[in-house]
Image (cartoon, rainbow, N blue to C red):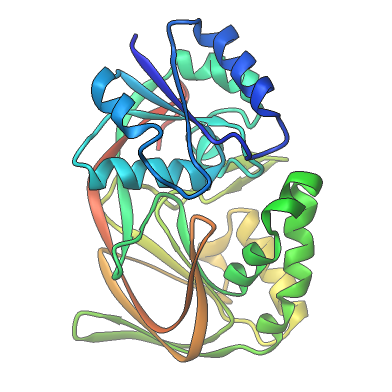
Length: 299
């Protein structure tokens, strides 16, 4: 099987040498190994992918690295199955596709995996996302966990970012959600998600089981709480898989949608900052890309 690896040398806690050794140990010396660049140029790896026409593009990095590679391949008009080797911190894409968050375990699982087509989400500025767009408090939480903190502290960095962003929860704003000519809702909220793929089964929890990246629709969820105590309880409902039963979570599915804010909100897609906007549109790109998933993945 022809495989090209695109590795982010600075993501996660493994050194570039440790990442290279793992790849050669697991895939052999016939693997074509490339790296991403600090300026996100595709010239360090895209020409190799085009030359090799691989069966799999193996992306070694975090969620942002996978998003970068997928977006670049689509822009270049190329479509190869992508596998996420979890060299990052959260590694939500790999885990949502049924793989271990440990790179060595995931390597074996990837070799036994299968390929499926997936929807992608798109923002009105052309930005793509695989997992989700985070708006308001979730975007501020992710921004608070900058790279140096994530590499040193792991998930503790996200906790620190969450504490820094609690002001948004205590200060919810007015949001209008519009689909076509129809106003779906006017909400008082400080936290919004627009999700395409998110499925985590850990610690007896089943997060995101109602979200599927195979139906041509995105899922919007708004946490409509008025204080920190309500937010904490609602967060428990969400991570325990009871989001559709919660009175404080407004949730809908759509193929295109517009969100209008009373004041500029921070927006991130798969952890990448898009800045602050007072309105934003999202749409689904159905069957837009192929990913390698685990043997047990059901979607």
